[in-house]
Picture 1 (cartoon, one colour):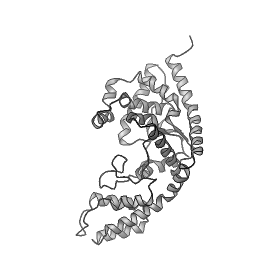
Picture 2 (tube, rainbow, N blue to C red; picture 1 turned 60 degrees about the vertical axis):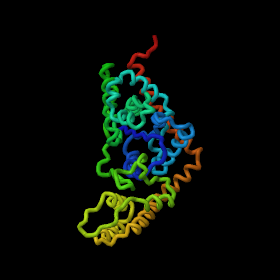
Picture 3 (cartoon, rainbow, N blue to C red; picture 1 turned 45 degrees about the vertical axis):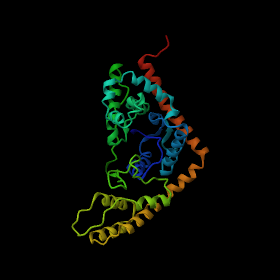
Picture 4 (cartoon, rainbow, N blue to C red; picture 1 turned 90 degrees about the vertical axis):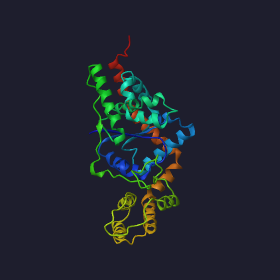
Length: 329
């Protein structure tokens, strides 16, 4: 059985792209593999959140994880900062991570460009902390997007370097978890690219019905087709893609036929799509509301998750310390 690890930064709400892109697969995976899901609040410190934001964002993520179907009785769900062993392994791995390879990291170069006023050491060593998150449980599979593949490659480098340096076969090589055909990509409402937090084009699991209606009605379209052979623009394709995933098959077919007949009314399509999204998300939104009001239960989930995660983490750090040579005189 593979040991699967996945983390999400504690930067607020999850959107439909997160849900269809990974969360639905996580719900299935937790019954098929030994899974660790963590909230990466250490990682969020690279952007200097306020104490209030840090706490509220962690709560929002754990609430939405649970509302989407992750089961704390099956998987291990924990907060990164509840594992001090992660910080220690991060320190030990940093001793064998070199400046040149960290500076060449694509995500670090991007951050230098986008936040030149805050180029901190945490950004530089971000891949090492990510490696510690993965290696602390000796994980073998990690669901990652394209933007994280380089970090996972660096994790393999750090693991192999440790094994070579200390002449052991201790850390396994983690590899990307491939969801295959079950991975669904949700486009944004702005007519370009995928749905994302930073792009302002997302529909969030916790959005109220009126918010969803406003967002969908503002979605980018065009003036409409003027002949049956006209190529559909990207923005309109995006709406049809979302409708194909969310709405009933005959609803999608109805509007597609009207598009091909050059009789489509985008306003009607958007109204229908908005209501279908609202209905689809209603069970999750209701769970989010209930869980958000139950801090005692959330604390129990995180406490239990930390206890389960520390069993694995403490064993790893103890063995790593012993391999390095931290032993009684």
